[in-house]
Length: 224
Image 1 (cartoon, rainbow, N blue to C red):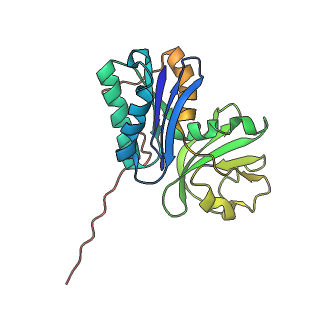
Image 2: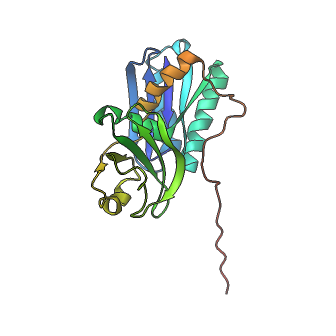
Image 3: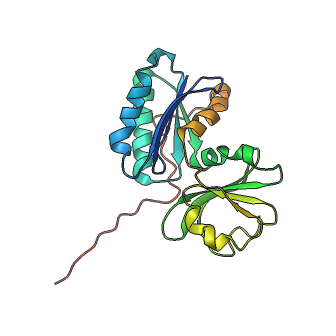
């Protein structure tokens, strides 16, 4: 079995899949700032019903996304891998979001998953209906000209960064907006199956979350 962890966004999610891709268990809760308190509860609940000796790998949503959420998720995944001598599988968070909707679009359409960054900025990538990456992961400040290169065909926008961009992008006649599609360990586990079978594992000692942008701390100084 493969245990999958998703903490890149506000959705704290853990899932268990068979190595054939069947979803066996899932626990998730979409609420900000709960990863530190709930992630290990979800893992414990799932493993309580599963012999830990049955685990073959740990899969993690590697980012981009929340700095804090990614650190918590990756730390948990590494701990499980070290403790049980299990391989680590990493999945791009945006590909996971796209996977959740890949069966909803036509062959000529594109999926543009978005993760909320700051203000009108989103982390995004573009995938075709087979989840092949058409445009690499990047950070985009969204305006009316965004995605003009691709909007000649149906473009499906989704993810937690989509709602704030919806009004701006609605000017494009080929823009379609999918509500309630979020990052989930269910998709991470499904995508991890093929990587497990092909032996695409990470170097646990050196693996780091894919932050995309460097973390910058800001200090506020008050003068009298």
